[in-house]
Length: 131
Image (cartoon, rainbow, N blue to C red; front, side, top):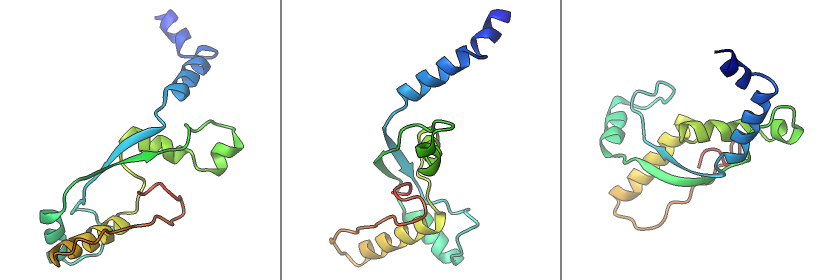
């Protein structure tokens, strides 16, 4: 038992953390699905049901910042910890209200039989963490 404890404490912990950082994926595939139970979205019950019944899961690639490194100013200033969160949960760091608006826009476009592409630009506080 004592040998195992030594492997997870300093200086070994620094080695394991470093290896974790070096092997972290730069590009990940994330998935997103409208969650009807999200309380922060103020939609009518009819709109919630419509979205829940007609929205499809979306999967797309994201290129992320390198892993967060404690004490590195670039990592702190660039919110690199969000990239670690996205890697861990394979889900974008995205406001549910933005997701609902995007779903509604695409659903409306589809209902109208339109074939024009829908372009969404993420310009929030953490640029690029949503889509």
